[in-house]
Image (cartoon, rainbow over all chains, first blue to last red; front, side):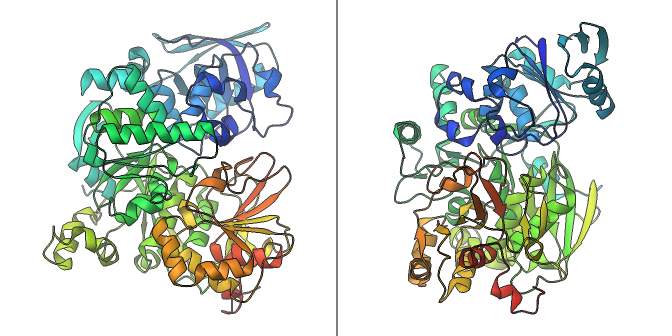
Length: 174
Length: 433
């Protein structure tokens, strides 16, 4: 199973689409590793610089409809090869969310009030999130604050994460 | 309790209910192209599972970048080509026979009412126009589809968008879907199926219905669905006449994929078409939509007519009608890409290709190309494209470029004017300027 903890990258915008996550011109790559330098290259977000802001981060916290647009699994792969295995958002586009779990990664939805609070109290600080998948709880920490956040994922999504992804699950079951 | 179209299709394809509302369904077709399939093929090979569930149910095409533009795209094409050959996938479409998947596969008769279809392409929702459940998926879902012929989905929730009235002259299916997305938002149908109903949809050709369903994903929908009717039967007749004794018999069978009168919807949205003006997007989201009249004068550098949204023969006819006797503005580059070889051939025979060439358009081979900034018309930083495609995302057609989505008629009129403007097909019909 992958690791779902680490320092947080806050992306304060809704509707971040797959073309922003990984532009189509890089879809000619057949290996996942080749996507590594291009994650969020075209993200339209003020003061965001992909060349420095991704460093040593492993978790994304963002707003609604994250990952809308194309079906390209290159989007979760680009996160994966950059060490991001957990994305927390107010909501996800269907295909992106499914692709995350199909790859054995976590796409967790939290209520808008909780997302607002995370942005308000932790954005701009050196924040880490530790994930306890068994008790379904995040421990959010900054130098001056801790917060526990309960989350929920379906049994099926949990099974995908624990079995390593949909291919492993389907192969074992169908 | 009555059922929606998607519920009926799911129930007819049920394989498993592993937990909660997750349903694993049997697939009638798995569509493949050269961008998202090679990774799945390579992974299957690496796992020692280089098999396909049924070579006759897999349809493959090289369409996104074709003919190959460089070594990488050539390799992607080769991986798909070699795979199709070694698994005896007969319906594989290569250079000379290839076209944009969501225009080509319906044209070949691969979609039927009640079918379940997946493809590693978000615009797979297009095929719902035939009363099918068709969904875009990622490479892992595709890989499992190829190997096992199944896919997992949440049991479908549907919304119904009922479109009454009549579209004005010069107002198209594209304007309608842009207005609908503008109304419900890019997140308005996420995780849901949209059933399109009403007099306007009933009166549409299959091409128009495909344009409508094609952009369902831009509102977040899993699939857009139109009810199969005689228009559907007529479109498919050459492919199904051996199966059914008569068109009425086919219609009777397809009626199974109409919703029950007491089907339960998450929401029913009513839309009046009569007052609709031609629409265009601004900004970087497909729900940022206004009337063309309100964008009048916005300068453009390029016009692109094509794609799985609007590269079909009716689209080219509308654009050509607008271009008749006119030429592209000297500051504008006009590009038209008929979506399939058959459409290209029709356009040649109807004199449409000559009209485009006389107007100063570049006519490219069928390919997805410029729509996603891959080839054949990538924008430079700061350039603006009037486009009949489906996405105006930041950088979509090239880094730093801006895309305005519109109908082929509006795109053609804008090509001539050098800026965004209403087509004469609309203006002359009494629509306000």
